[in-house]
Image 1: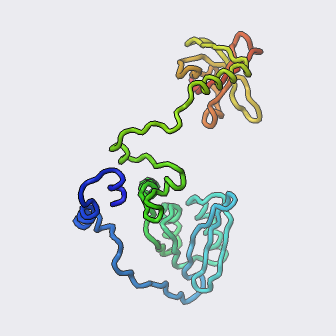
Image 2 (image 1 turned 135 degrees about the vertical axis):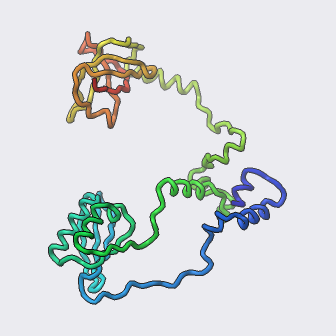
Image 3 (image 1 turned 60 degrees about the vertical axis):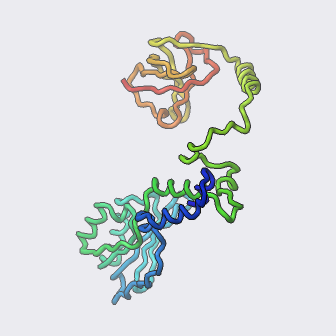
Length: 287
């Protein structure tokens, strides 16, 4: 906090003021470090095999997940290779084990969505299983992103008062605190001459010719239908950029490529053999 404050503003005795703010902040005290660690609480030893099992997931490894089940009494492991770790698939695999070894009295797991789902709860209720959750609740992805950005943009004494972003990326990350500072000019302004030269080379190499379509004009768009592109007829409904148009399908048909690529090559309806040498981004809407 002190390093961040010194990076953006200055006033007399900033360190002392920051420390006083933290000491008087009730929210800061809620998230302060624990002064004393709690004693270790070990699991009790079961009286027989398959009385209590511990379940967790490992992976992904090469696109696969592994459900690891360990019997607390014998330490017997069961490992199931899975392509999906959904709640339904988890329940399905556990029921297979129950068919072989019987229904356990207790299942211990973390707070994963598979184990807190209604399906998992129903399985435990039906089998008279006590489900115990271990570990704290996992923070949301949004909270993790805030923590990551704060850490990466905070000056570190071990890095000669530079931020991890400066050392790793070679630049400072733009944060909300950056709004307090005047905008910096780009260290590498784009060269208009190089940009025009690139455009000229592309147009010359591809024989590109300026072309505009009218709203309501019929045309064809090249749509990906595995394993090749196919021409699909449509009507231009609106222009959404310099070379971007939106087409409405003339025939109601599912467009599988819109969700993934949305880049097609257009050609005029009157001349099916003439393909324009530029790229259009189109959305083939259902009627």
